[in-house]
Amino acid sequence: MAALHINPPENFTFSTPCNWSKWKMRFERYRIASGLSTKTGNEQVNSLLYIMGEKAEDIFSSFGLFETEQDDFDIVLKKFNAHFVVKKNTTFERAQFNKRVQLDGESVNTFITALYTLSEHCEYGVLHDELIRDRIVVGILDKNLSEKLQLDADLTLTKVIERVRLSEVAKEQQGKLMEKDSASVNAISPNKPAKFLKQKPSLGAMKQNVKHDFHRKNNENESRLHGKCKWCGKQRHDKRVCPARDARCRQCSKIRHYAKVCITKSQTGCPEVTYLGVVQLESKKKN
Image (cartoon, rainbow, N blue to C red; front, side):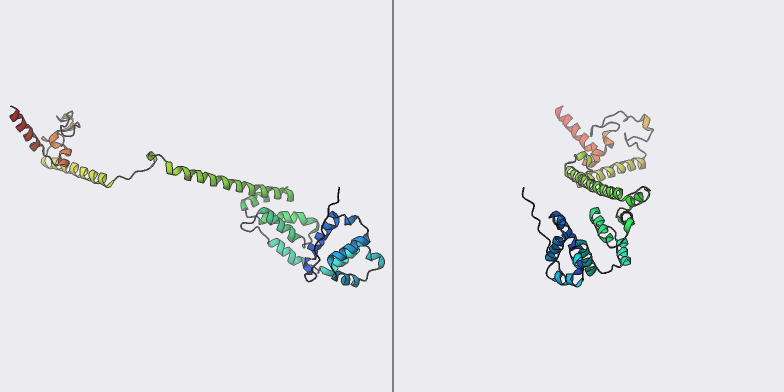
């Protein structure tokens, strides 16, 4: 089986020494993946200088190492670290770390990764994991979850990362379910049965109701003014003894009133006397 070929990282850009830590990390991965780490110290040092680029030779010469030190990869790497990495301002780095909070629209994973990156220059030592844990608890957007996590006396970094991730996934799933429910309601609404819809009466029906109420009230007022019963048209009396109580109107076929006081007659404008006269004339012709 052929060995896997691993390409080395690009030459180091000496004009940006602040990128040394990142480049060194890439070289370390290459060193292990390619099997270079199993070679002699001399081979590793020469590979480092060659991959870094031509300018690395001048810097290497300035170290003034003994011959035995020149073949020690760890010693050479430490010298390059001292050359490129300026003394860190831990106060500033820690201030940046402690100000970091989860941004609007930022995922939990992105927030946690940013905290790990910032913590690299804080030199927290054994407190590293605990301080990242605390920063996650205080910095997440979900303040309700933050309060719950603060009450957990046995909270670890692993545990807090797991809980904030699960909470984020649960919220995303809940949001998708709400969108589906909303879409279902919108799809059903246009087909609602008519009985659930409040129908507005037509203009004609409204006019008819107003006209009916007017004639009814007018008829009642006339009955009260003339002292007549509004059901039978005779002198006012107790409704319980009204002769029209069980009578059926010949005008509208409804019970409890005579045709001569029927409000339907008033609406159509056909006085009962005229109607009876026609009936009487027709009866005489037949006779």
